Amino acid sequence: MPSGSQGATRPIIILGVDRSGTSLVASMVAAWGAYEGADDGMSQGDDANPEGYWEYGALKPLNNELLEGEKVSHWHPTFRMLVKERASDPVMSEKAKRLITGMESANSPWFWKEPDVCVTLPFWKQLWKDPLYVITVRNPHDTAVSWKKFILPDEMQDQYPLMTANLLRWQFYLLSILAEVDAAKEKIFIQYETLLKSPREEAEKLDRFLSAGCEIEAGDEERVSAMAGRIRSSLWRNKSPVPLSRVPQASKEQKAFYELLKKKVTRPSEPFVAARYPMYAGYWEYLELVDLIL
Image (tube, rainbow, N blue to C red):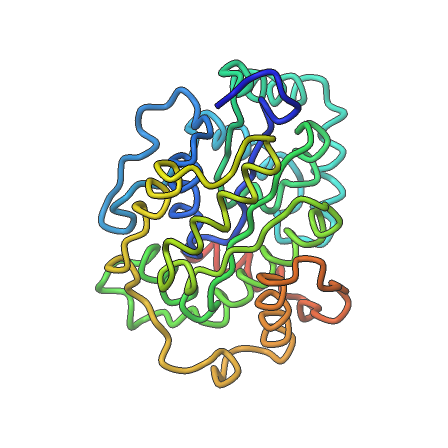
């Protein structure tokens, strides 16, 4: 990556709920050339994510401090306001600034991917310098099925359906993302299903977005081929046979919200009005109980 331009150390923030393609997109951003941090274990995978999680190890403990540092859970409606105020805490803000400075030390565009950053965005937004946002969109039914397989052992899969909880989780995370970044001009929405069906075209699309934001020439053949090469259709293991509109556990708000997100894949400026997609009253108590049980 060339240095000296405005985009030389620009952060690329990959956002999305777990099991929605954030790891895949992060691996593509790494192949594009963004700095991943001094963490040799980032690309190591397992059965759930064979190609690795691409999460910077030093970020998670600090983000967990933010998640656990309030008297309310991160599901609570007041959490966003409280976590935003943590940026005025000199100890916490200094820890965060040191982490960011370490990423900038490579004098290259850099990226972070950590799903729980979606709910601590009010804190981080005050410290990042002109970030680019990459937001993943996937059928929330498939995300919910995949998340259940990820968190529960095989022998417990039939005991705990969790579909309603996981759809609520998806809705909460994506609403949290849009509440904080929808006003940002430089953002891109990546549809997981399209990514798997059209690797080359989607790699070119992501390359154009990142290159424009970091002031480098787009379309380098080697770079785009490396990005497309990260996409393996064999990893697409959860494909819903029905659209979300026919999933009985999905609320009308969730169905409408997903339709909006799909529109944003092609038109990122499509208007977002949070009041049209409310979480039902008391959702946070339910999600806290699910967390407690799990």
